[in-house]
Length: 203
Image (cartoon, rainbow, N blue to C red; front, top):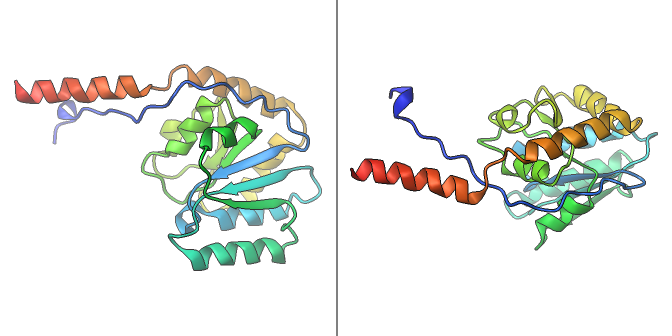
């Protein structure tokens, strides 16, 4: 298929109030179903090496797709002494409220076809830490986040350390996320592209 025949409509985001990012300790948010593809295990391993720093993490996401894996993740956190610092919150009704009270968004997925939660985090003005897997680099600009190789807990820990050990890097990425939010397509933009493509096909 010739590239010029392909029309891409990226998923839209809603314009939302930016997160204040004033948590003390900093609040790390992960929003994804607890499945192997999302690599929560890598994140837990990385966080274990940062136990001397001040932080709290909240894992928001369904456990129904792989309940055995969800149990293994909680056992991993307990084994590494992180049960009091990682909140396995399960599913929530208001994702926007989660973004709003977070200080940064972290998700080291092993693969993402697009990565809607990354766009939503940027829309909320959150600094992002993730893995350079699938389409994530297309969603997260360098000005808004740090991306590391997939399945690399050491590199992930280093990236998180940069954000947690002082405010300069975190505040810079926060400003970058707020700037990048303005260029994210809204749902009306995505719908307009699809409608235009359908009209062209019909004609």
